[in-house]
Length: 83
Image 1 (cartoon, rainbow, N blue to C red):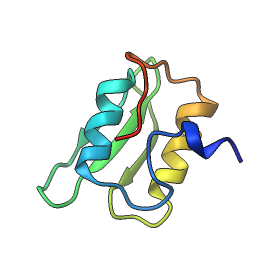
Image 2: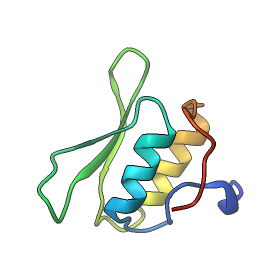
Image 3: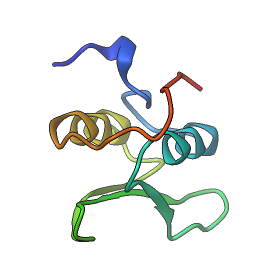
Image 4: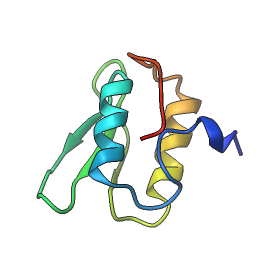
């Protein structure tokens, strides 16, 4: 597995604060199906096709989203920081 010190999300469920930081830091990442207490973070490819999405409360959601950010080379828009 890749270096967890450089990942934007915790390995399990993530908060809105985490999601907002990732959306601000990366291109092609968005929040969808926002229902207040729960929402999905989505990663589409450069053509808009879905690569990955996960509800914020899912076990392992952050781990898989982190993996897709790294493995698909999603470009950051700003310097990344841990929320």
